[in-house]
Image (cartoon, helix red, strand yellow):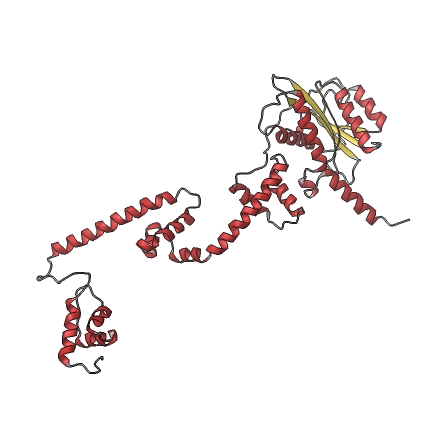
Length: 400
């Protein structure tokens, strides 16, 4: 049975025992004596007893000299520096994995049992509260990473279906149309993380060869590449398709300024006037009639030829021409050509054969009208835009 009243000699001996064991705690000494730790603590306070700090088996018989104290402090500092170097050496393996701050947090989490959070944060320059917040939000991060992984899989599908041409805006529009509520900034972040990007614009090459002696038409566009409704204003141009061996095919286009629809096009292995008249004829077949429409082109010899002027008169088209040597006056057609080549060649310098060039062009030009999203059209395809415009017009027009 534990005594309730302890004699003075017992108290004095208990305090002396505590003082003689600097490596032991009050709780350990009290356990050895079979008394309550608080009781022993009160006796120590009442006696005003103290003992040397640190874990020493026994107190030195003589006080340490200043030199010995300095040596002990230096040895302690050396041990601390060696441990700090060891910590930094281990941490270096974590710092090459992307986000440096997150990697430091992870290092603290992996080594905090051995070195302690406080010491690791001090060495690595981390605010402890930030580390503890990072630990508390681990579950949220894991859920976000899983969500990003699912989104990345959907992005890969859309990117692959676009032949690797779609960037952030078009992929965002595609996913939103499929019912995905996602921000374009998140799309950009996920695409960066999986090293996906759309095809970027390359330097354009000028192919227009003007005929100074040919007839000129006035500029009816004035760099205003817009139209209130389809089949009223068009632009036309010629671009080249480079083939292996220094050969070329040539593509002529007729593009609607209202819907950006490719109304007509033609591909040949020459740049004679038939190239552009064939593209105009294809546009007439698409629209049924081009009467009253304006067709804006550059001053290439094909467009200033008498044969092309006669073809325009036959279908009721008014000719418009840009200034000589000014690509900005026909910028929309130039932009279309640049987009076509960068999304079909995708970094290649040429096509291996004329057949492959024709097939790639055929596929892309039809996809352009039916599926490729255009930023100016609210990220809709030209045909989808025209369909929506007709629906809106029908709805707003009252019945007779």
